[in-house]
Length: 139
Image (cartoon, rainbow, N blue to C red; front, side, top):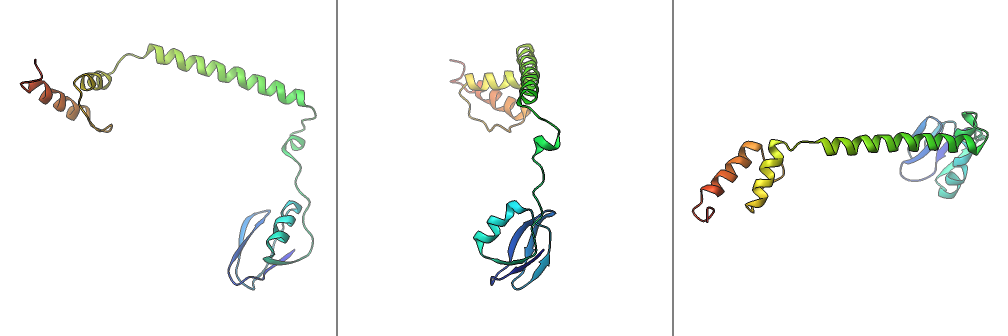
């Protein structure tokens, strides 16, 4: 089909192969699905000659699915897999031992230190040591 931009500025149109920018007065030859027809006509930006291409089949039709029970069985299997992954994640979180950084952050919080989240461990340790060296920190 032929699509001509009737507007003073460039306009885009969704074609089968992706978006196409059409300059003012320019005519392009492209294939466009029927589902785009209402959008093209509503915008009023283009003069169209030729026919639209039939819409592609829905994904469920293309994959050969004929009933909702297949989809629900597939969904149930995915839910089981997700639950298993969630359980594994919780187990890993429970097994996690505190790292040096966790200990430093805990100590800094107890001392009331403000520090940026991206501070290095060495700098955080320096801040903690400096706070502990203050005369009022030991009392």
